[in-house]
Amino acid sequence: MAKQNNILEFVSFEHHNELVSLVNLKGELGFLQELDEIYQDVLHAFSVNGDNNVQFMVSIMYLQAHSEFYVGMSQFFKSHISKAFFSLRIAIDASFNAQYFMKNPRDIPAFLEENHPLQKKIFWRIKDYTAKNTKGHSLIQSLIKIHEVASSFAAHSSLQSIVHKYKHVIDTDQKREEVQINYFDAVELRDFLAYYFALLKGHFRVFQFFYNDFFKKEFRIIYPEREKRISDFETKINLKSKQHPLSRKIKSEK
Image (tube, rainbow, N blue to C red):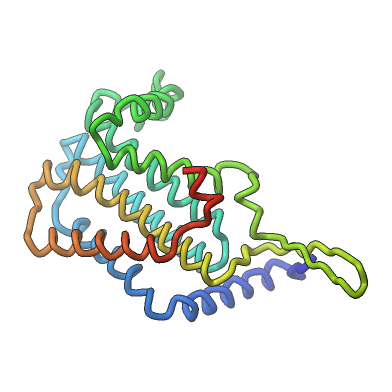
């Protein structure tokens, strides 16, 4: 087992992994920065009306989704793939919450009040509502599929959450097989890029939901320059996803 001697050494390995990840990405880091700028552009384009519960809640969910984008990508750079997909899963959950509150504003107090009688039921209402209201909404359908993939990595101690933490080494001379285990997720560069663009595409789909279903309709913040930038990014991220696809095993779980 390849292990760290203590937690400080573990943290130092995380910093080392971050540097290696940045080197491996080279010219691809621009995608990360551009998606962040797209998120930030909308974040700073409006002021929330404190008396409007829907505006307040959806804006909070958008902020949570954006913060999980930060957390998830930073975990990815540290070689914690399952943690990165866990953050993507939370970001998608935030979009599900937003959709529900836009359609069911009466349930917002139950979500905000800790001792509200509906507090324990509100989460399951959201999940049930989302599952039953995908017809004609391609973004929600797409997010549900991405959520399923993210959950396979992050929801439990599953195969996908540990598969990159070990590898089999066969010594043909000694006729011996050894299993090497690590605290970090080791992947080939090809798979590293596939996960990178899969995560970015997932977070972009979350952004698109908020932007198309809420910000454009509620605040009418529509500008040709912004629309073009979003459209151009979608074209580029779709192309990169095709150039660096996830493995067949992962895609079969979508």
